[in-house]
Length: 134
Picture (cartoon, helix red, strand yellow):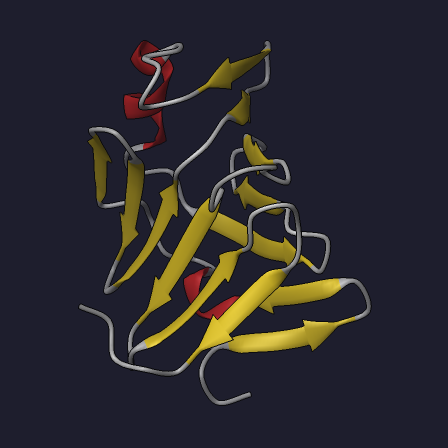
């Protein structure tokens, strides 16, 4: 697709984020990672796996927030949204941010330049939109 989202066997690869460093990490009730004009928002629990450990992280419950700024300047190697509703972000240094399927809320949203977005659905699955973002 020309929107930077490609269909693969088990979901969607977001190739427009590859090779771009995380330029901003914002932590409020949601974790936001900005890569150029694109963004990833994590609304639920996630796991941050480094070369030494894997820890649960969650912005709104304030779980392991001290780990999240370490994502600043990390170069994105792969972003994959599975049909089941999970999200996997691999970084060039080997770190991973894994967001599982969220049962009751949206787990994550990816906003791309050109007003495209892809997001998880409560309970599983993904939704794609080409409507302008607010």
